[in-house]
Length: 160
Image (cartoon, rainbow, N blue to C red; front, side, top):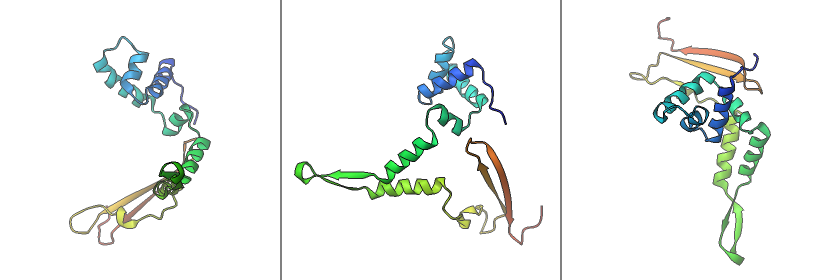
């Protein structure tokens, strides 16, 4: 799939959106200064929806690539804390922060097994009807590569 072509105003809006740290109102007013502030919020939100930018593309536009993310994750895995002052100053590992970063890495790499008890739909009693699981695999450029759909049902459920 080719990269989407955007108008100059849409590109300016995205740059302003990043500059204003996700504030659509300020970004829209910067690109379209004659618009009223009350309507800028709604118009900015609608424009952002219409642009339909992926998170991967937005991060790339912000200058956050995979290498930068990897470096930040490594910094988190080596987090330390300081106690005391002067001669009594002690630098020791911050295991709480390290554990949080390790958890984040495992989630990013999908290393956790699926907990089937969390997949059941809440219903009357303990009988659930069906659950649809979607596995979407993305390529390095953030585009959908493949999609696998799996449906599970209770045996006592009638077929649809």
